[in-house]
Image (spheres, rainbow, N blue to C red):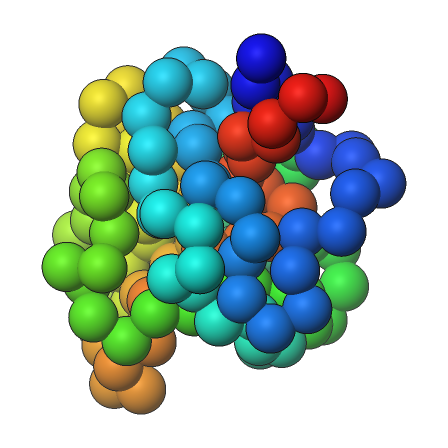
Length: 130
């Protein structure tokens, strides 16, 4: 039997690529990214820290200056993900949200750098036999 786990967690999620399917931490049913598709990178967490507290998902956005993300360079690599309108303060930035329940942000897209980033600790993971 598989369970969907949401941070905090103590399991190895993958050093280079995501070892597990990534799910929405809110509805727990929507697959966001299949296992093995996202590359683990460290990037600026500031775009997520600018979201108001009322809009922050549980668990909360990274509090450090940088955070770990699952990166893809093609928006069609995602299974079920929605994009916000451009951030007026940063025209090339869009927030990522679950396409089923519309909750987020789960990460952000930097269109200038062609990076689509899901925050490692802001999503859920389907763990077999957990």
